[in-house]
Length: 484
Image (cartoon, rainbow, N blue to C red):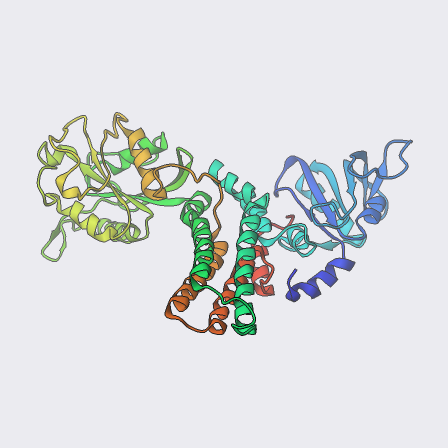
C-alpha cells in the first residue's frame, strides 16, 4: 500500500461496508456483501437461523434463516455465510447474504444493514480494501473489473492471467534486475577504482539489454489486448451501390441494413457489434461515396451529402477499413491497371492513411477479375467475395483478424498482455532504460546514469501500484461497480 493510502487504510480498519454484489434488476437470487471488523456481529443481528441446532456461524458454510429488519421483523428467507479474515477477498472479516432477487426486497435488506451500522460501499471499495490489505496488487485489482467486462474468450484469458499474478511476477522479475543494475552502479560511484573492481560497461550493457528486451516483450501484445478488451472499429467504405450493406448483413449473419439497388440507400452510418471468430468488433456501414464534380458532389441531396461527410470522418478513426468494390461495375479488367481505375477507391485509400485496408472485390458471382489481387492495391490484403451468396466471407474474416491484430492470427504464447494504464507505465520504464543505454555509450559518469535507473524502477512499480498516488487509485477504482 502506498503512503497516500494510509488515511484510507485507517478508515477501513474501523468501518464495515455493505453493498449489493449482483446486477440491478429482478432476478432469482441476489447477493449482499459485508466487509469489515463488524461483519460478523452485523450478520448475527440481521440473521435469524431456522435450525434449532444452530450454535453460531461456521466459517465458510451456508446457513438458512430469516433476514430481519432493524426492528427484528422478518423480511426474507435467505442463506448466509460468514468468512473470517485475513483469508478473504478483502483481507477482512466478510459476510454474504443470498436473498431473493426482487429489486425492492434487495434494497430493503441493504437499508436494514445500513441502519444496523454498516456503511454504504463506494465504487470498487471491496477491491480497494483488498489492494490496501495486500491481498491484491493493482494489476490484479484491475483484472477483476476486466474479467467481469471481458467481451471475448481471449480477453477473459488475459484478465484471468493478470488476476493470477502472472503480470505482477514478470514485472517483479524485471524490477529485481533493475535493482541489480542499481547496486552495480552504486558500488562504482561509492568506491574508487583502486578499492573494488571497476564496473565493466560491456557487461552492464548486456544486463541492461536483457531488461530492455523483457519490457519490450510485455509491450508487444499491448494493442492485441486492448482490441480484445474494448473491441475494434471496422469501417465498410466504397462507392454507392458497391454492396456494403449486403456485406454488413453477411458478416452479422442477419438482415440489419436495408439493401436496395437504388444508389444512396444508406445515408447515415449503421454501427453494429459483432464477434468475428473471437474478435469483438464494431462494424460501421457508411454512406457510399460519389464522384466529385465541379467542386461538389454529384448528388444534390443534402442529407446524402452529410452522410458522405460522416463516412470520411469515420475512416480516419477506424482500426481497419474494408474497401468494398463493385466488381460488376469495374469489369474483368478492373484490377489489371497499375493505377486505381475507381476514383472513389483511390479516395478511400487516401483518407484511410495508415489505417489497415482490406480490398474486397464484391459481386464475384456476377464478375470475377482476370487479375487478382489488384496491381494498384500495392500488396494490400485482398479477397473476392459475393456478399449475396456468402462466398469467401470466412476468408475475409481471417484477413480482418490478421490486419487488426497484426500477429498472423496467432495468440501470444504466454497469454499475457498489459492494459492501457500498465502499458503506459512500461513505456515510461522502457524510455528510461533506453536513455540509460545511450548515456553509457556516450561515456557519461555513473552517478549521472543512475537517475534513469531510479525512474525506471519507479515506473515498473506503478504497474503493480506500489508507488501509485491516491489520485491514480481513485481513477482506477472509480470504474468498478459498487459491489466489487
